[in-house]
Length: 394
Ligand code: ADP
Image (cartoon, rainbow, N blue to C red):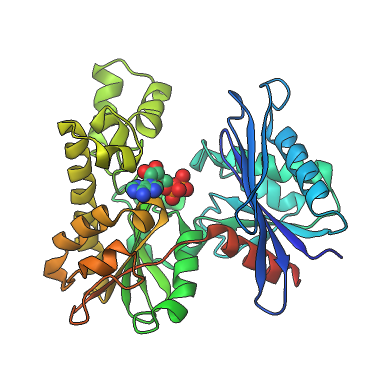
């Protein structure tokens, strides 16, 4: 039996990986992290070791490394050469959709794969790639146990009232409901708060996961009670290239009056909207913050506005707010966006400590602040490794 856990997160054009060494009880040491990106365009493997040093930086032509399976072979070759003599005990996968029933990670079996394939229509841009990575491991190492960890699972604690859309009830029964995503990130934060911020861990907390995908989650006593994301990862906040919540009448209008096909609208909503679409410059918050273009300003102002609206809604669901937690790329790194959001949240009792905010906290509100604000880095890969370890009894 090996002592390594491989974590895989397969996207449409990338395969991200992390390797953890199983230490004593509760200890998982990150050994390496990296990704093959540019699948289909310009495949490129980049990886770092535990100390942050580069352990791989390699490029191929598209025909050399065309699939997730081939990318996995290259990752395996790297790991074998780097960690000779060490063996894997299991593989954990990020799987975006666990459907209405799975509220916990799942051991992969042929039956489980059949079930997970039925959720492809619910997450057409993500689920097929997640399942492709599982199949690639099955082919390469059929003896290795694999675990699927779902982005939806942490939100299965939501009341039915929270999951409903106002459509005829039979649509809810057919699975058209609010699922919520980024669950592995929120679960990690909820699990981390007792150490980092014990005074708020049992309280009413809104977590803002602000990355290239962005959402917010209301957590009470460590359990998710509501989230800004819904049936798909298009709902809620403005994101890098997605518009977030919008009137569904717009889709009908585009279909009926602008002659757009469903595929074209899908591309508009997933790839051309959000910060990118509004600014006309890009989806990287760093670039927009540094730009003096009025449209970049407008995009940032709208981003902050949408977060503020959602925060008010989630605080109402919680019946008040004890703390606001920022995480993910923008949440962890942009003191500017945190300041803007906290200024808008004064009415909720948040009083920012400007110096603490510049240093990314972890606590970024003043000592006298009625509700506190925090920066807590997320670690979805570690959450997956923990689940995999527990489920496989390692
Ligand atoms: P993903 O959803 O791809 O995992 P991340 O959580 O890594 O996204 O967030 C990526 C985003 O974080 C980038 O698009 C960038 O806009 C933003 N970001 C990273 N560093 C900074 C920074 N120093 N200031 C502002 N934004 C940042």
